[in-house]
Image (cartoon, rainbow, N blue to C red; front, side, top):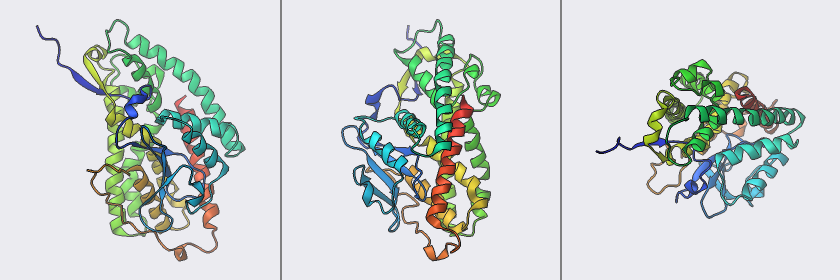
Amino acid sequence: MAGPPMETLIVDPIPMRQTLSLSTGITIFLPTTSPLCGGMALRVYPEEQPQLLVPNPFGTGVMVAGVEGQDSLGFTLTAFDRVLIRQMASFRTLTPQDVRERFLDTAAKGFAGRETQKLARIATNGRTVRRAAIHRKVSELLTGIHLHPGLSAYLENIFFHLGFAPECIRAGRGAFALNERTPPRLSIIRNALRGLAPSLNSLEGNALTTERVIAVATEALRRIEALYGAHAGLLNDPARLAHFNVSYEGAIREVATLDGWVRFALMLEEIPRAPCAVHMLADLASLVQILSHSNHASAVRSPLANVSRPSLSSWPHEVDRGLYIEERNERLIHMSLLYDIKEN
């Protein structure tokens, strides 16, 4: 008699480094404190040095540079960014978990200032406790279930990385797990989805650019919410996990940019205090370009590929642009660390 049909579960691939052997590589968001508009990411390949992706400061699109070419990016990197990039370049293979852990470690050593150091140390200490609690809860959830080898570790990693509360990881919770104690990063993703169009339409910028940013960001934010929902759904009937085959590719691409979309959501909240609306729109467009970047031969051309950046003549003369962006980026780093702390 045939057994139950095989289903496919997309889970966090962090413990399986061979899952990064995707020929086209993956784009992992990289936290930054430099005076950089938009954001920064690493393009990671299985057998090559990673590449830095940054908004092109000399024109449109994304600029790609080797990690050793930090001084040719068109802006000056902070000490924090230099140390973090140097550590990333030392990995033979790299995962989103590696990036987050190295980010916390670098911040905790004081390279991004005293306040960031304090927050990073609190977040790091809390993560150790939460990791142990999630391990216990997943073990209880899967007791007596014959699983695909290693699936328990995969589930521990996805629940941990997405910020699920340990007490919510129990049979029968399903979608209730996301409402009983909503993961902080999911909360801000949901808020961003609700406020995306109103926030961007309130800016006096290029209407076409606004529409393109809304379209690309809406699709990405919905995919991330679906990632949370899919894994919460596994709690409804844990016995089903005995018949799941493990697939990683979809999840790794979403997890790799999760912190970048959190940054996007935080930047939406920055709109009211922005000195110049048209530059705020350009920053958001640049970040979306970085997070949706793909060099796959069959990839559809990005709708934001030719978005131009406004002239500096439109920036208020009384505001130092470089200083404002650097202070804003540090503020975004603080907020990101607070989300790590809230998860604990």
